[in-house]
Length: 297
Picture 1 (tube, rainbow, N blue to C red):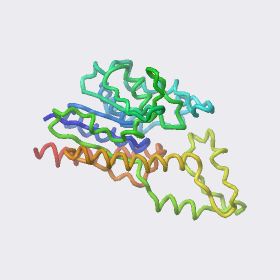
Picture 2 (cartoon, rainbow, N blue to C red):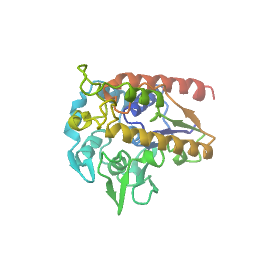
Picture 3 (tube, one colour):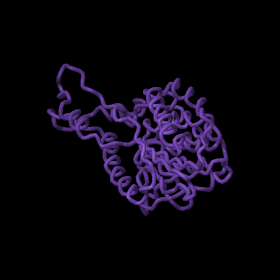
Picture 4 (cartoon, rainbow, N blue to C red):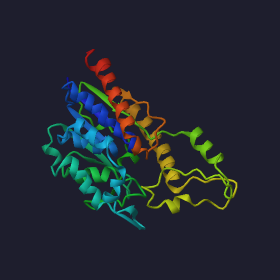
């Protein structure tokens, strides 16, 4: 059976893809093709390049996430907060330096041309450059300059690129890990925030990058009675709204796929310190897919 997996964007929630692929590995099930967007491109690319998911699982769940300060070259400029040169070194640790066309598993990932809004598909060329482009969250990473294009996160244009899977796949899975638009949580958090001047310590939002710019994020608006969302929360919520709409539209054109949504609603995009729990949820979802869709057929 030719199995196609489309691994969606979702930052920390995308770590669940590790668990899902680990479940496949344990059963000796090798997907025929993988497509990915953003974190899905990183995890899917590492798998397609031959990186063992059990090993990646151990490495990620025991990782001190402060190590990201070594790979995120913070340089606040008009182009973005993270230059991205060091992140390519981080990607290399998992993929090596290889051309996509040389991978044993058919692989593709997607990025977005920020100047034209067009979807840019990578199914050949340097794997590291392709992943770097696909994970470039707007406003955070400096866009990846590639062939006269400025490329940003693939999730903007195609959050779960199931349409990139080959037609010859016997079954296709669209793994949607978010980001989800959580109005109740988001609004409640803002409206119930502590006023400036209260003795009680104000709740801090979690979208800072290892507290490197926490001073910026802790600053409030001019209204003493309202705790405003910080710039990252506003940006992430905006992207979540856009991606939800884009994915629903894509599904209408790809009704033959199985949509899988792991139970990740309690996790934020930046909950990397919850990696173990997120990976375990992905693993259980992978076992469920195998039992209900693969062995049954």
